[in-house]
Image (cartoon, rainbow, N blue to C red; front, side, top):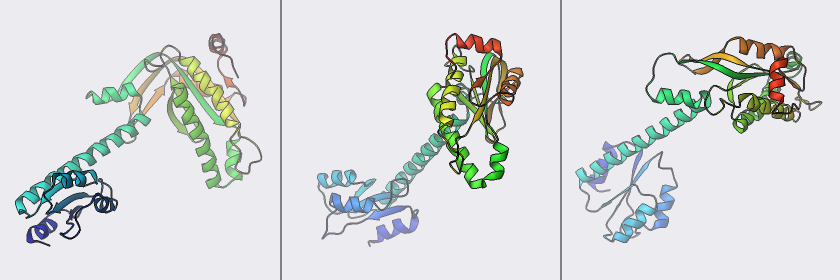
Length: 288
């Protein structure tokens, strides 16, 4: 290897590779592609060094996966400058990917309008007062007995299947998953512009689909399907982002407490709500 090439390898990150085809075997697209397949762009940068002067060879090298190109004879400072540039580009790409992943994770934890406020630079505790939201709680009937009967691994797999099914339904109906508490599932709507005017109908539709979905999820031994109680209530509530490590958008107030009591004192297989709320929603929805 020429002195300049050795200098590049000894003075740059091991994440950078200098591909030098050699005079007998020109850098055909196939050879470049094979080399590039050893790792993706996110794991290394490929600088192709060759003596061929053809512009077509340069284009084919880029198309085959090279990040940059340099012709012989090597000039140390030029090669090092190209290497440093590619490493900066790689770092910028990695940063962009990390930011994208962080934003995706936050979007699963916080409502869109809260994320927009945070992106706008708002700091400190974020709290809101809502005139009308709909809250829903669901709970597995006999979960204490189930937990004592089956292994922890079996119970975890059962809960994962149920929560995955419910997560898909929150997307379908545009309701917000507040959190899970043990085997309980906590949903809300009406806290944003998208669900402000039809949140009772959205939450009820979610409840009906959740009851249908739970009938297909079996106990760990397959002896019977799970059964859940569902309670919901519509009314005013406070909400806010609590904590900085794993922040959550939480709801507080009598509406939350009443929805929880509706679930706790309800029967399996149907949504429960106070009579006046149920009558109001039933005008536009049919209870399953």
